[in-house]
Image (cartoon, rainbow, N blue to C red; front, side, top):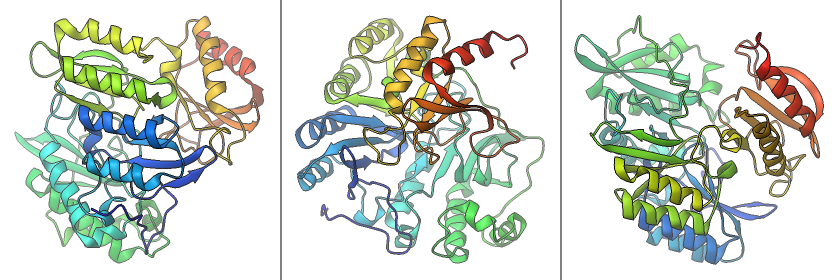
Amino acid sequence: MSSRQTSNPLRPTGCPGLLRIVRALDGGICRVKLSGGAISAPQAIAVADAAERYAGGVIEATNRANLQIRGIGDQQTALIDSLLAAGLGPRHAAGDDVRNLMLSPAAGIDRHRLLDTRPLAERILATLQGDERFHDLSAKFAVQLDGGEALAMLEHPHDLWLSAFEREGQQRLAFGLAGCPTDSPAGSVALDDGHGLVVAVLDLFLELARPEQTRMRHLLAEHTLETVLAQLAGRVAMEHVSEWQRTPDHNALHIGAHPQAEARMAYVGAVPSLGRLDSATLRGAARLALDFGDGSLRFTPWQSLLLPNVRDEHCAEVIRRLEQLGLLCHADQALARMIACSGSSGCGKSLADTKGDAVQLAALLQRHGHALSVHLSGCPRSCAAAHVAPATLLAVAPGHYDLYFRDAAQAGFGTLHARNLTIEAVAALLDARSRSPFDA
């Protein structure tokens, strides 16, 4: 495959890809899209080597379970070619942008799964990459396939989501448009019709949407859901869904060791501080996967990584070695619950050093024994979090933030609670709120 950079002529994008490097304050950004978040150990080492040789050595785990290399200089072609040689590129160059299919990081191994989503996911990804019609989709257009796993990010909105459930002993897929699996479904299809549903929805979107309508929510602002579903019903056999609701598991199942479906096997989850790894850390994690796992890593929408298929008796040693690499492996570590964008050191739109401030806030909260989920955003674009966090800090000036609390009745970050707070003031306020018996 050529390393020629590509762009979408119908719905252009400023998002980075593997073949399209986007400039930032700290250099170029290359995004490597991973199939279901999975990457082999040799491929992870190739990413680490590329970041070290051709960039600043900074690697980010994204909230869509992909990887980004930051700080790329003038050796862009060499970097891209090295990633393509490792098999990390799309099957077709024009299909790079549309490889946006999210699975559970524990797909196929989760004890609570209803369905191993990986075979269907392979079919969907092959169609997205191989069918030229779908290359006109926006680089942000995203699909989620949920197999009923306990470890599942159910709060990220997707243009199309599918979620497994059982009815009268038969497996079916509930689905919805422009939302999350925890929403009320728009309908359901038989499991064998899952691939056909995806194709039908994407075809219909491209037929109805104008070029400036890049997401399903834009289309539904002009066409009612009922109208879209009526047209969809002519293309795939659909049924109504009643008395079914997907419920999330709010335990931090992406951190630490957790049993798999197979007896005496576990996956081990570790969080890079604020989603960032250096080359040595990623290389070290890959070697642990070779020594103790199945030779693969899985990245997660929580900007963390998993080592799957570790024998129970090796979990403690794997955790010890991951911590030696600088990764966080315990849910009670405050920094493991922090999300922050690149901040003013990497982005010209950011009003604050969000990553530095997050480290400071985590230290203050840890001192009080709190591990709270907090999102720090340098501007209203919310690049670091696809979902609304329980608490969001929106930068207004260096070291100063407005504080929001999640509220289902409020759009955006939620309810504005206080303005122009220092990090110390935020820590004091969150500490007091966490101690309040009236706080839900």
